[in-house]
Length: 417
Ligand SMILES: [Zn+2]
Image 1: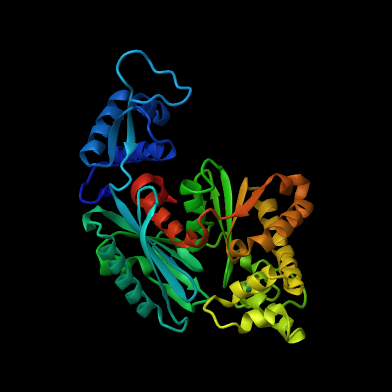
Image 2: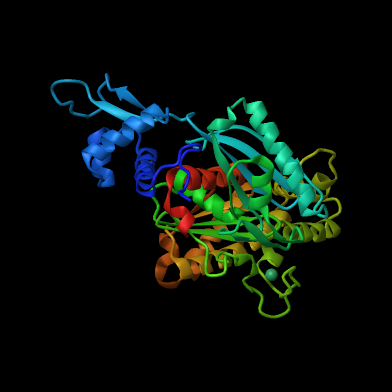
């Protein structure tokens, strides 16, 4: 069966590939002329003219007459330059980020700009099939509230926790949710009658940054996320690296304390997750409150407000609790050790931090950078850029929607990985 391009029209694979190459070139650089697109894509001028007229008919791109000179640009004598640009709201996708105890659903346009989103919290003991029913309801609600026509929605991208088989869309194992072999793609596709693509949630964040965020133009990128678990998403030359058995990037289970470490959910002792996950930091915070029951942290934790416990820990440190600050910097050392592993193994150009590492970036970043630059081999650690995600709290959902955009709109190759 031929692949479907934009929903509803079956076209041959070469043409679909060419269309997507054109779209991707327009995503990288807006306002290109037909001749420039031909040069960038190595396609003939005739092919480009035909493809562009088809995209104009579908309302996906439009022509712009450039009446104003760009600064420093030399205008050729004669008629004004006509350039082509993507129509941001021509199509949409939905992103679903599944985390531990919460999922977030967002509807975005083809620039991955979010129009509407909703977050839903769930008990982690709730069976997967019940959570899926809630996800379906939330997706329907987000589509309805956004007012977008269903025919303009290309598909759904899902970023799931733990091991995910990208080919089959099965969430093989999410130990922090106790999910085993959950057929996310098929179940959601059936319930929603829309195409669905699924990958590990941290990989989708890395992909999102690569095409729509701080990683644009970066060849090799690692996204390191921490919350209940700790994981990394690796991108090389614009493509997600998944590994031979889907587990690439499971750095949370790198053994850091070789002897005497705490027991991890995976069964090993001394894993990175036992040292720098949200839970690990909260355990350390509890010890501090026992030692200093009148301290700033103890007061901040007992305040009646609705911010999360980890945010309270950060708040206490920002309010001047030096013991808490020292504890966070100590945890940042272990993060730095983990990032050193990433640098030595993968030598990325850019490492982005997400989740609690970006929420507490004022505590984690500098000590982690220092550790990486001291410990990495051959000075590699001094050349890697390390910063917080450019998406903030939206990293999960914008990653999931980026997966859908790349899979259903911009990148014909992604399904072959
Ligand atoms: Zn482990």
